[in-house]
Amino acid sequence: MMELENIKPDIVHDATGTYCPIPITELAKVMKKAEKGQIIELLADDEGAVQDVPAWCETTGNEFLGYKEEDGIYIFYVRKTQD
Image 1 (cartoon, one colour):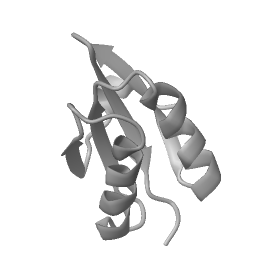
Image 2 (spheres, rainbow, N blue to C red; image 1 turned 60 degrees about the vertical axis):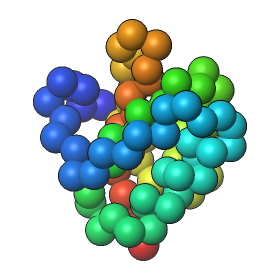
Image 3 (cartoon, one colour; image 1 turned 90 degrees about the horizontal axis):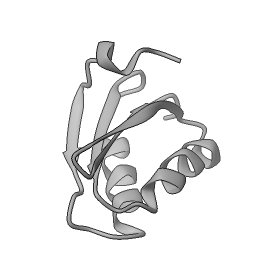
């Protein structure tokens, strides 16, 4: 797994203030617009996203790079590997 501090996202999407399933539906929308290989940074403050984002990646075949938490905001990194 990459060092999260070294990840340079291609797209940043802020889904803070929303709750399940909105962060995942937002991630799916952004992913449709992204090009294969691009990295998406998703910001969310819904604790459920900690389980939902990796599960969504596993289901869709995209690469979950990890997450960190800063001041109650979860910052997820996902690489688009599927078209």
